[in-house]
Amino acid sequence: MTSFMHAIAAMVADGFTPTIAAGVAMALILWAIAYFRGNVPGGLAAVYCLLLTAGCVVIFYRNEPLAGTASIELQATISRQQVRDMSGQRCATLMQGKITPLPVRRVVCPPGAAAESTATLDVPSDQAGALLAASQTLSITALAACQ
Amino acid sequence: MPEIFGQVLSAFKSILSGSFWFGAFLPVAVFAAANLLLAAQIFPAADKLLNQIGAEKWNWLVPAVLGLVVAAYVLGPMVRLFRAVFDGRRLPDRLFTLLLPLHVVRRDLADSSLRAAKLRQDVVGEWQRRAQLNLAVAKVTQPRPVPGAGTPRIRVADASRLVTRLQRRVRAARSINVAEVSQVEAALIRARRSISPLTDPIVDGLEQSFFQSLAYLAVMAGSHAARLLDRKRRLPPQVQATSMGNVRQYLENYANDVYHADFDFLWPRVQAVIVETDAMAKRIDAARSLADFAVLSVLLTIVTMLVWLPLLAALDTTPWHFLIVGIFGPVVAWLFFHLMLESQVSLGELAQIATDRFRFEVLKTLHIKPPLTLSAERQIWKTLCEAARGEGIDADIAWTLPPQ
Image (cartoon, rainbow over all chains, first blue to last red; front, top):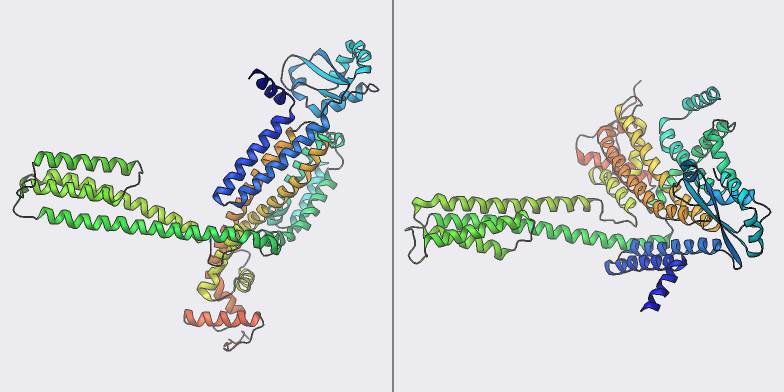
């Protein structure tokens, strides 16, 4: 039972499985409603639900950190408004621009409105040391670029 | 900049009608803004553009508005085509054949539901008539109390309990069957027969409560039947493949049913004789603008979804924008689709009123002698429509001399 729970927890943690499971479950429910009520829009909704699931899986797959990357946490004190203005995409784009030529694979900015916040950068393992060494100055610069 | 913009806008205002601004330009402008917002989420250039517009430092405002006006001007006349697709006339044959059975089934279900509701209405009416008759007979029974009818107190208490139970169940909208009604009726008859005429008011009160419950049931059955009839009206006998097609058919059948005239023949001519200053012209213009707005909005919502769902899946880093467009897109399309149906109904009803009011103006414009009876009028419209369709006509039409 414990191993089963661990397996479930691992599946939930990876992001793919819950998306696929939720999408397929929703599609099955819609299909069942359509089947028992003889309702064509219900069947179309099920197909649409599967397409949305596929779209989410594509997005997850494209943005999954590559093998051999390391996550580095940078901390900086920023205002509530600055944090609120951050969106994953915009922040990632700007931060990648700022810290070039270090090849950052992915940047996750916190969505909340905390006064002090952390940004996580996925970088290739061999570059992690260099980035970490520069993090004292880099963190402030990078997060300032997120405004 | 605002002065130039105002001058350009007022120049266009004088050329283009109010229905253009509301029916074509507004949806195009709204969806252009929505698309720019979406683009800003994944393209930095679009984000920069959005910030420039917000900061009022943008030199491309006038060209952008002109571009939107031109896009709306091109899309405006295409609304007829889009409407024809939505109402099934321009749907591909395969899709039409696929969708048609769904509406045939809907019509059959609506028919059977309406028949059931009417039957229920009749049944409740029958219960009322039978109860009135039987209870009136019990009241005039002589001599009373009837020997062997039972103890008055027990009979009255029994009837009171059953009447209260029926009342409670009717108010709770529970299903009432004939056995239940007959049971209450029999209990009231037994109570009436067990008491002397002097104590009749006790059972009179119970009877009144019983009849009130039956009247309540009759009202409920009537309302239900009326609701179903209203729904069925939008499903004409010549059922179409889409809801929009059914609504159109039901509204356009009016001209044929009443005057034996084809809607497509009569309606353009009626519109031509309505003077611009008439209140009806303004109402028709407003209804048509709303209908155009809804048709274009449905189309632009579908196009926005078809364009942005694949783009967001391919370019975005998080699934949130994709999910927002994917979930709210169909909801918005559904809302606009129903706005399109309702605006079509509103326009169709105005068309019916305008046809009733202005059809003699059409005859006058065509120099046709006004008919004295409805059947003569029907013959005129039938002949004209047949001639317009290129069919051989077997009746003649009397002209009036144009004024000298």
